Length: 239
Image 1 (cartoon, rainbow, N blue to C red):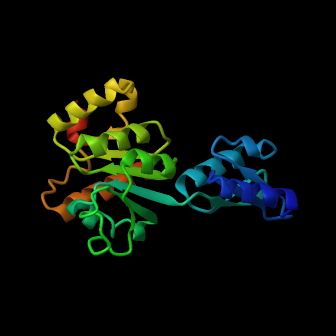
Image 2 (image 1 turned 180 degrees about the vertical axis):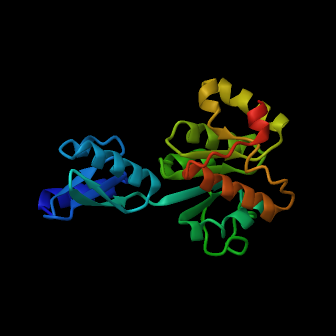
C-alpha cells in the first residue's frame, strides 16, 4: 500500500466515512472506493459496482473482471444502537445488540432509570436527548430507537435522527400515539416523506407482548432494514 493510499484510508476511518479497499490479486494494485464510487474512477465499472455492494453488505469478497481477480475489503464505521429511554424494553434490548455488532448507548436524564445496576456494561448518557444526540451525531451506521412515550424525551431525539443519516429510526407507541407524534414533528418542519422514515409502531409484527419479545421484534427489524430484507409490516402495507 502506498503512503498516499494509507493516509487516505486512515483519514476515512478517522472521519467515520465508509470506504472499501480494492486489491488486484495479480499485482497488488490498490484503490479506494466510497459508497458513491467516487474514489474508484480508475477501476473497471464491474469492480466499482461490486465494491459498493460489498460496502453496503459489510462483507469482504473476491470478484473477477476482465480476467483479473480483486479482493474487496470494506472498512465501515462501527454499527451503533442509540436507545432513548432506560426502560424495561431497553434492558432487554441492550444485551441483544452487541453480539450482532452494535455498540449500545442508552440516553435518559432520569438517573433513577439510567443506572449501572440496571444496565451493566452499557454506555449510559444522562444528558437530555437533544444534547446527547448533538454529540453522538447518528450516521449511516446508526440505528435510533425511542422508548419513553414522553414527548419531552422522544421528540428531540427523533427530530435529530430525522436530520441525520441514521439507517433506522423506530419509536415505541400505539398508532394513535404515533399519529400525535407525527403531528408534533410536522410542526418542527419535517415533511411527510421524511417522517415516513420512522418505524412506528416499532418492530416486526410478531405479536410481541413482553419486554423481551418487544426487544426481539425491534432488533429483528433493525437487522432486516440493515440487510435490506423485503419484510413489510401488514399495518404499514395497509396504510
